[in-house]
Image 1: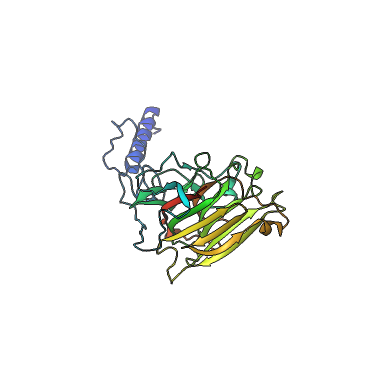
Image 2: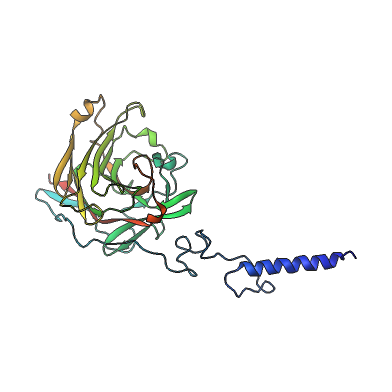
Amino acid sequence: MPLSFKYLVFISASILMLVLACSSNSGDMDPLTDDDPTPQASCSDGIRNGDEEGVDCGGSNCADCPTTLVIPDSGYTTPESYVGYSLVWSDEFDGDSLDTGKWDYHLGTGCPNLCGWGNNELQAFTDRSQNLYFAEGNLVMEARREFIFGKEYSSARIHTDDLFEFQYGRVDIRASMPSAAGTWVALFMLNKEYTIEDPGAYWPSGGEIDIMEYLGEDRNDILGTGHYGINFPANHRFNSVHFSALDGDPFDEVYYVFSIIWEEDKITWLVNDVEYHTMTPETTQANGQPYPFNDQFYFVFALSVGGNLPNVNPIPSNFPTNLLVDYVRVFKPNE
């Protein structure tokens, strides 16, 4: 005998309530009395959702996320003063939040004007405490494996554009590198006129000073580089020199100090006060290009994943991984 319309509605409603009740992992939701019977996130669904801090970890419901943070107990350090110089700007990272009077964030994927941050990078940058925080007097940037803004990884990138721009001096950055292959650390400087909104206007013609670059695939090697050249991409040029870890200590196990001494018409790169690279106008003129490094520049610190420079793909199980920066100091020569 055919079922009545009212009976069909009753059965359909009953099935719907049963499905909603079984979809919750809270175990105490009553679909007859709850105003919002939305299925709850699961701590085993392989997705970062709800208030989870990572994939299926952290937040109010799931177990704490694993940490890979290891703070070195040794390494090189540099003095807080030099004869003939004055300290004009620094950050010792002794607080518990980013000093917004000194730094700002670059966020997202770089789109629409610099998608992939110009390097086909695999991460999105955030200002979340999961990607940038402070521990024992260190700025910690953490690259994490998670789907966010259409990317498979998250991380952090900060800068001093319009907050601190300077010309000439000595820069010291004490830092310890991440361990995961596929990571790419860049502690660098850009021309004060460079913007993400119009990157081609001042890159590389305005110059880029890479105080150091590091790839997690080789924990015993860093690079010091200067980028320059007009009419990109036809005349993009760079001069890059490698420097190997000292005394058998990989760059991810102890602190190193990465420095430049920046003078008019000359940049000298150092690691732990060992000079290993210089650039002058003769360097760029040998490639038929002007020397752009006598202008004002600002800092950019970035921990990226993947991109054009790494030669290996990241392995998801190696994340999270961390970059630690103990301090950055800028000294100007006395008049």
